Image (cartoon, rainbow, N blue to C red; front, side):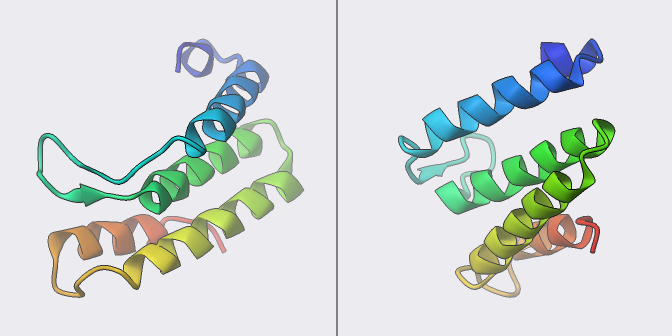
Length: 102
C-alpha cells in the first residue's frame, strides 16, 4: 500500500502479486470481526485480483489487466453462487462485480 500511495505502481504490483501468491495457499475461511459475516478465500481473491488489475491499468499493461479482471469476475460469480440472494453480502458482492470493466 505504501508503494501504491507513493506512485510506485510497478513495485506495488510486484509486492502485492507476490503477497497474493504466498498468502493464497494459506488462506482459510473466516468471519469478519466487524460484521460477523463469513469471508471465503474466493472473496478475498476476487477483490485482490480486481485491485491488481487496477494497478496494471495504471501501468498501461492492458492485456494483463484484462486477464486479472476476468479472473476477478469469475471468482465473484463463483462466490455469488454460494450466497443467499437476499443477503447484504450478496448485494455487496454484486455491486463489486458490477464495477469490473467488461
